[in-house]
View (cartoon, one colour):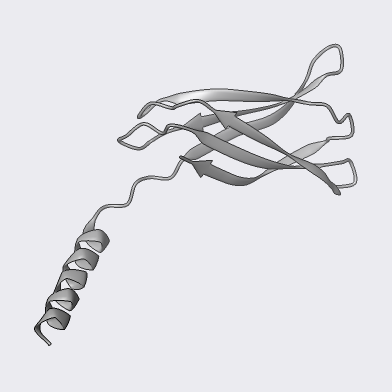
Length: 111
């Protein structure tokens, strides 16, 4: 009986400590755009900001790709190297599908 109460007390202390911690700010993804070069090649560019107080070792962004009739025609993943605390990086990815007219960020995963 005594072990049950001590386990419950430990769980309560852990939960109250975890709930009392201030949440880290979210990863910020901005300036998402399609860039077309003079030769007709298309790139997806975006800016990623790490507002956290700690570095992020890796970020993966998953984008959905759409054609001129707003039909989903695929997806692309952009991976980044480490992003230091308070820093921003600009990422780009070559798009080999000439039908891409719009993109939408589906997920931003941080590791």
